[in-house]
Image 1 (cartoon, helix red, strand yellow):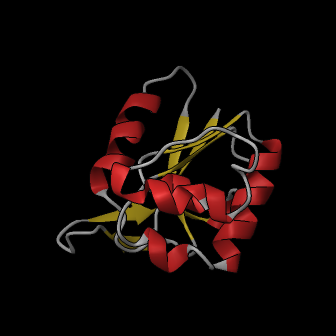
Image 2 (cartoon, rainbow, N blue to C red; image 1 turned 90 degrees about the horizontal axis):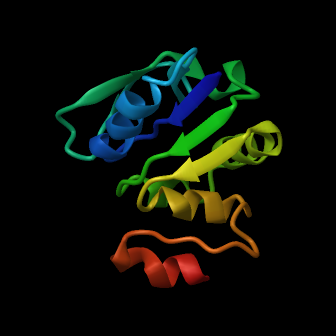
Length: 129
């Protein structure tokens, strides 16, 4: 089972590492950090970088998609590469989910239309739109 955790500049580390540690313990889990390009991606503090082992293009059909939150999500809301990948990955995934403001990226991709969702309390009005 391939689990893709999306990274982008200024993600919140806990939102990515928590699911990585938890889901990575599933039997036969292949948990990977993915980003637009491979290599280091800085968290919202700027002091921590996680490595995207694979690009989005290299992981077209993960079984599970996890989108972490973080202040950098606002810069990704109109990123066609990421949003197109989320739509395509969701179409074949067993489960697509987010942590905190990662839900805003799922909404920007149109994946929450007609569904109930939540986010950080400061972002709820934005999520409603």
